[in-house]
Amino acid sequence: MEEVLRGVGREDSSVSGQAVSQADVTANLASGLHWLHFSAPVETAFEADTGAQRSRRLFFQEIPALLLFEMLVIVDASAVPDIVPTAVILRLGVMNVIGLVTMWMLWRNPPPILREGLPTFVLVVQSAILLALVALSDSPFRGHYHVGMLLVVMFGVMVQRIRFWYMVVGSIATLVLFTVAGVMFSGLHPIELQGTMSVMFVATLFSMMAGYALEHDERLSWLRSQNERLRSERFEEMSAIDPLTGLGNRRALDAMLATLSISGTPDKTLAVAIADIDHFKAYNDAFGHVAGDDCLRRVAGRLVGEARKHGDHVFRFGGEEFVILLADADTDAALLTCERMRGAVEAAAVPHVAPHPDAVVTISIGVSVVPRSRVQNADSLIFEADAALYEAKSHGRNQVWALPFKPEGFSPRERDGAVA
Image (cartoon, rainbow, N blue to C red; front, side, top):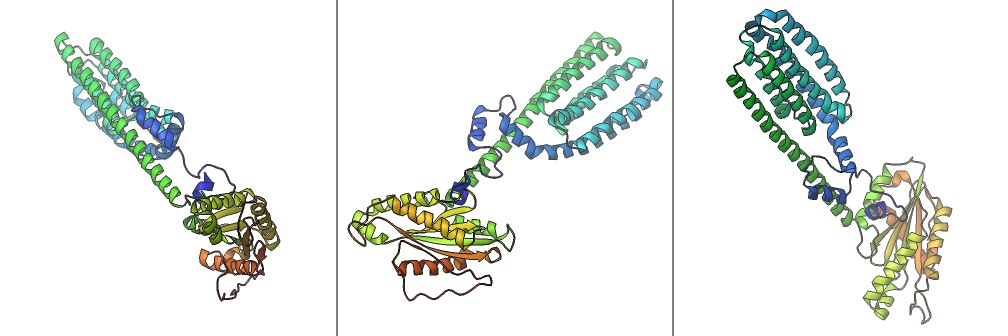
């Protein structure tokens, strides 16, 4: 939640940029990825993270695949010399058209079904061309020519690393073409054919096992990297939270100011308020530190409860002080919001002993309004609001004071001493 990550008063939304949750990642890690597929949200994140890069890689790998297939026309001249013109048409004509269309589509980063299906289709077409050459030729050397289909499968698995299930479909299609070519057109002796087909089947099986392992490792590596990223983000998130109140701490305040300094327009304003629990030391002395911690939590809840839904951010600044940021608020709006906060704390009627036995816990608030252009660091902003807080305390506490708005900046009065 943004409230937790950034110390925001009333905003309740998911963390920006987080594609998957820790629970999703943990569940997928526990599944073992035996079917090489993540759950829906994780699969979507995986594709969003890796899809474009994978499309580019497949695009460039199609280039050597086509070139090597075309260069084999040299082998055709000696192995199947009776159909060289046909081989040229199939290799340099049909295959090039299909390959170039595939490359054009890959460059456009298509959906996964096309990104993986198109290269698989290209490999099947290459195997079909080899089958055609074997079927059309009468050369005595054509018998072992279709073994080149094995190279097609190995290229798809080892080099292109086409997703496993797509490659399973492509490999089955290639095995069917290989069997048809061997049985019907190769002219091989049955013993030779049996040996050739055994090698093809076993090599394809081994290739599929390798393809499964490659994709499994790729997915597992990505999933583990996401797990580490989420853990790191969670650590960063927790390091910006005050554990007692659940509000953002000084680190979260600095991060918020850095965000505000680069957002909005220079003519916008930012109201900064410091709320301090009156006579808090006396409260701790009278009721103990456990009750003091509970008092801090209750005051924090009241401040957050009275914050505007958008633009108000509450932080614990240390001890019994809280910093409130009111984005795009002028002095009147800031005073109105802070007065609601002060009244809410008083209305909670938390018993106190100071300044008299029937007292309740109250807060004093100092407000300063500055242009957005001056939002650079917490120290200068808080110094001005602190001067207003001094006025609120020195005039009797349990009230809200605001310093005059100075567009060009000003130097607040130096305090002679702190007022508790």
